[in-house]
Image (cartoon, rainbow, N blue to C red):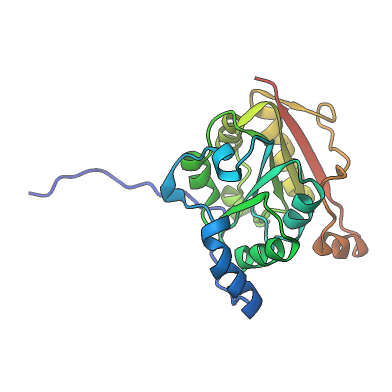
Length: 231
């Protein structure tokens, strides 16, 4: 007799896993540095002081792409420690290559699903900032349910931030910016650092990417949202 356990509900993912090829340099950096810089979800909750060998503000970046801006931030802000989460191995390989070239000690990375990493590996009240720059906008209306920035997700982010910690979002899709503003404004325990319904100027710590510069030349806007944890 087979037991009926009911329907299985799978979480709708906010990304499509695209395969890509690493350059030889990225592959070597990935292979050499994986043990040193790579973190594994299977290892569970992290103690950041142990991971980095010091006490410092910890910044989590979700979806760092090819890693250029994350590596630049880590280089320019050595007083901060950075954890990047990215599902695409070529991006992780590229970040490891950049970190190796710059001799950085304040970067670690997960090659994994950010939602799972957040739930299983990031302690509550441990992060100074969470940054999510130019996530997939899923611009078709029927795909909006796949957008990463949704109320349950930002509520989960808040539990991981220290009091006064910041969620920093950026997008070049106006519709997604409006969606982000609505979600963040509805979420409890956050305060818009630019004032109610206002977007923030780009902070100096966020580099302007090549992608962003190309968009500016084409007349595309960019919207930054900064919300701090108040409770």
